[in-house]
Amino acid sequence: MAQRKKLEEERAQRQQARGWTSWLWGSADPDVPNQDAGFGVPMTEEQRRQLYDILDYDEKSAIAASLETPRDAVKLRVAAELRKGSFALKSHPRGAASDIISMVFESFCADFIQRSDNFEASVSLKGLSVFDGTTKNTLHPQIVQVKNPITKHVRPGKHTESDEPFFYLKLESNPLDQRADTALIARMRHMEIIYHRGYVEAIAKFLRPPESQLESVEALLVSKITCFPLS
Image 1: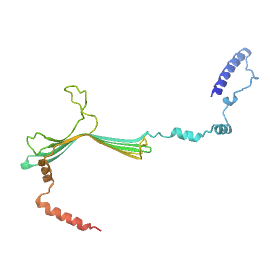
Image 2: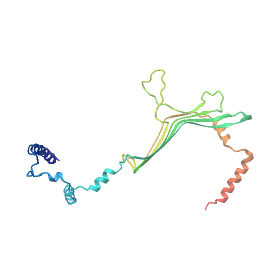
Image 3: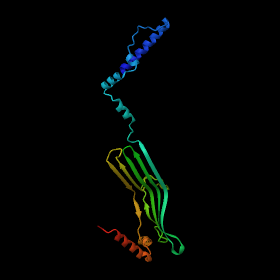
Image 4: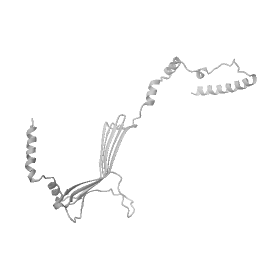
């Protein structure tokens, strides 16, 4: 490259000198040899092959390497988010609906990323709360809650919530940092659970079928076991 730059500078100087000569004499000097014909004319295939052999250069491999997709290039990404949802068990004593137990969750996210030779799948849940509806005037209506981490230097009157999700699960196949063939990451923040037998018995009673249908359920189970005997 240095030799080529030097030859190009010399060629520019000669062209400038020939330009002045042509302007004075009305024609170019035919006796001036073209010393840089090797750079001024196209190379033949034989010359190109000899040059590549000397430089140990493979043109096809270089083109393939330049077109190769980097490992971190994303081919497909699918993301979904449910900002808020709830689930409740309800009873209907004398037509008046009431909650036995109710659950509220916030920001349920699912993410999938596909790359050329790996993929990532993750799910996260930012918040979770469970409320008891069986005990009237209870001091602890919320029986399950997520504990926020204790943070220092919080201004008086300011309540901060952690941006870290309550639950996080991530599965990676052939991670980019090559720390393993498969990686599984799971994190969960602290929870506070208040237990008493009232709502446990209410849930069990809700899930128990009526006595009038117990015989039908038992007959169904017996028929299933008979149809699929153990070998």
